[in-house]
Length: 106
Image (cartoon, rainbow, N blue to C red):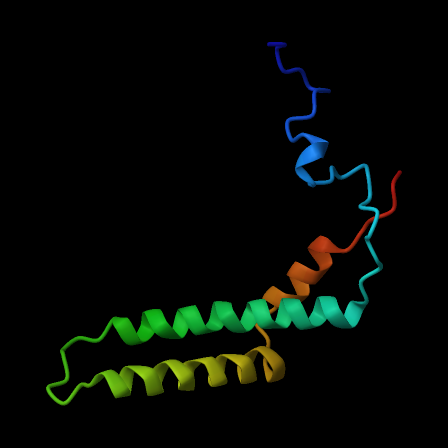
């Protein structure tokens, strides 16, 4: 077995995973609209997790609590999170989209 060096690829190309320097054969340019949509959906998921944690931090258990209420709360949180991510974003989507955009090589 050969020792790993800084130039030895750790992921074999036969696994179907492309390294950064070699573009995939079927790669296609992704538009900014697709990137914005994915980033906004990620931000909505992030906000939904924040809301879920906030609801889990209840001080006392409600005696009339039911599983249906949990389902309703989850759907309500997802809808609210999507609305917040679209209308009043936190900036997570913008930074995520900016971070994954290709940069010109020096």
